[in-house]
Structure formats: C-alpha cells, structure tokens
Image (cartoon, rainbow, N blue to C red):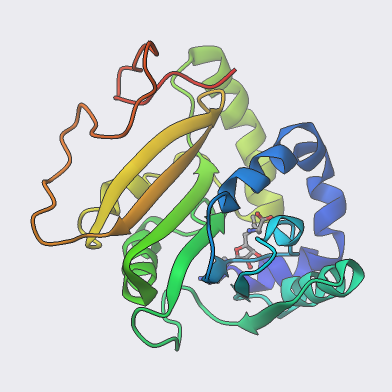
Length: 232
Ligand SMILES: C[S@@+](CC[C@H](N)C(=O)[O-])C[C@H]1O[C@@H](n2cnc3c(N)ncnc32)[C@H](O)[C@@H]1O
C-alpha cells in the first residue's frame, strides 16, 4: 500500500494535481457516476474529487488506505454539504459483506497499485459488488503513439515520485481471472486514459475475444488492440 506516500502529500495533493484536474480530468468525473444509483462505493476516494458528482439520492461510501487523504475528503464533503461516509480501508481486503454495493467507481487508483495487487483488488471489488452491479474504473494507459508514449514516459518519472503512479498498467489482463466480465472499454482522453465498465461474471458469460466484445460506437475505426478510437 502507498498510504505513506499519500499521507505525506495529502495536504498538497489538490495543488499538485491542479493542472491535470482543470485541463481535462475534472470533466471526466461526472461521466463516472452517470446512471448510477443505490449504494455506491468510491474505492480510493482520495481527497474526494469525485464528491461533487455523486448522484443526489445515492448512498455513497468512500474508502481509502490513507488517513491523510480521507481527512482532505472529509473537509471537501463538509464544504460541499455532501452526505458521504468515509472509511479507512484497503480495497484489496475490505470488511464489507458480499454483494454490498450496486455500483463501484474507482478513479486513478489502479495506476497506483503494483502488478501483484491488481488481481486481489479486482477480486475484492467483484466480491462486494451485487450480481448485475456495475464497476467503473478510470485510469491511465500508455499511449501507443510514439511521441505521446515518449512524453508519458517522461512525465511518469515525476508522477511516480510524487504520486507513486505509473502509466503502463495492465488491469484488463486481470478482469476475467477476477471473475468479472468486461461490459465496455473505451478511451476517454486521447489514447492515454481509458474507462473500463465491468460487472461480476454470470454463468454463461462468454470469454472475451481479443477483438473486443465491448460496445463500439458505429462508424468508429477500432484501434489495433480493439479499443474504439479516442474521443475528440
Ligand atoms: C492518484 S490517487 C486518486 C484519488 C481519487 N480517486 C481521484 O480520482 O482523485 C490514488 C488514491 O488511491 C489510494 N489507494 C492506494 N492504494 C489503495 C488501497 N490498496 N486501498 C485503498 N486506497 C488505496 C491512495 O491513498 C490515493 O488516495
């Protein structure tokens, strides 16, 4: 767990993150909660950047490994008058009973988890998600375009030092082994950030073919790895 890193940077996190948040990241957040209702988990809630976008009538619980980040989230929730329960917990082993949530959202958290933490984290999210529920993950992915890739590799050194984050995370490889089914996957910011929509696998779910079973918008040229083309 990177809670020491995050405890240390918590008071400065929003400031350090500001350029990303206000240029492109902020606008993606509302999309993460569209159509969700009931009991929702914000896994790795951080300083609570998603709080303004929580659906009005939903019951939202935010968990994070870092007490420092949770303190910032609490302040934000108070400032906004938002009703959200905030708990310190490791998303790889929470104490929630099975099938606790209608939906789970996690934004820019899997880029902070090591390779050997991806599967345990996904398994835990599957366990606590209701059958038929929704799991949405928003995260970085390394661009396949040579110049962008080079730029990301350069920025990654700073991100890694500040946020313990990296860009070449392969969360998708663990989706099926975790007992989850890919409902949709798409780039939402060039080919650098992607949104995965998952649900607990059901008997009869076909294994996903490499060419993608994701819902691809019509008249959009698929990328070589099966993603729909990046949104403009
Ligand atoms: C890059 S921040 C993203 C925060 C927030 N979701 C956002 O979109 O701004 C990553 C967050 O994940 C949390 N985190 C890392 N590993 C975790 C774990 N195993 N369980 C719970 N939270 C974790 C960190 O403490 C940090 O707050």
